[in-house]
Length: 252
Image 1 (cartoon, rainbow, N blue to C red):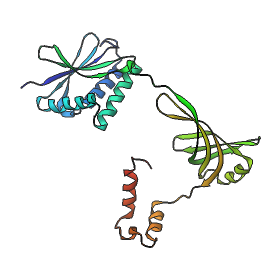
Image 2 (cartoon, rainbow, N blue to C red):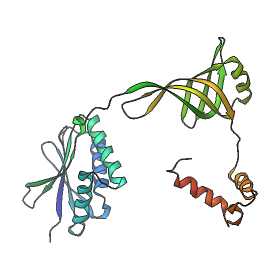
Image 3 (cartoon, rainbow, N blue to C red):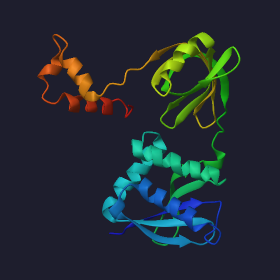
Image 4 (cartoon, one colour):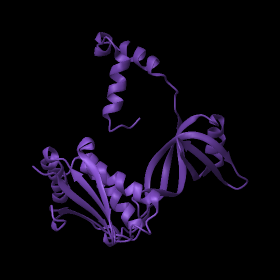
């Protein structure tokens, strides 16, 4: 019983020209995409264009090929879909395309298992700007201005919303909550970038709420005090709250 060899072909480089760090990134992505850490082994780097050869142990060949087939058919596991997109983006950034081939014992390519469009994938356009009513949460980190329109900035984690404006009347009340968490409401102007992210072009604040800083312990105490609440019967309500937050797509 023989192992199977797969080739990850990259057309943009040769073994002599590809930077070592870039080659290592491609090798790591290729290994992770195949999905069987202990059964996937580096075989060689073939001459010509960059061809990373991997040897798959015989027992795990069906699992690896099935995983690649699922990606090709459009129903991959989440981790495989993410890894495919990461490799394809790397190829696009390198102005390259990629292929995964099967090689027989005589070194002859017998089939193509997967293709990475890379530089040939459709270009995503930017859209907008769009105007939409909504709200933004964050810590108020600055507010001020000399004109009738007052500028303010919110920080939410690593994101800073800096193109927000409001009236002097609202700013006067909002300024009482400097460096505190608030939620501002109004009309936002947004642009969708080519990478799928949204960029705030401007936000006109019409009202706001000061957000109460509540710990999980205080929140569970309040919930258990509600008449008829099932929280008071829970042995560990803090753990239940953490689980609920974790199940919400990882958002907090």
